[in-house]
Image (cartoon, rainbow, N blue to C red; front, side, top):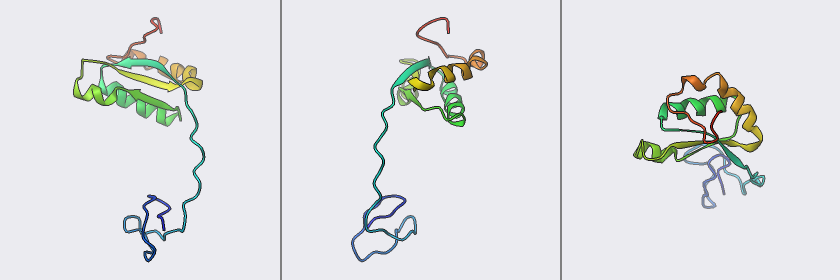
Length: 115
């Protein structure tokens, strides 16, 4: 028996999930295969505020992103920048979104130069 929401497994005599309060099902539905995403670095920054803003911006525009080194940035702020990685297929769209905001960022840089 499984909870359809949190996917917790229960023994046979249980009928509802203790956490979600949902009825249990005999088996979980098949998960679609994970889609491979190739990321490309758009920018990097030492500023956690830039990271927070970019996450919000990308989520509001449905841009697939990954922040490389985000947790390391919090532990050792000036040791290594956080890399702002976006789906290669959405790279130009993300780059265009950032044009009007780039001057407002305090630590945003491009490895390619001139962006």
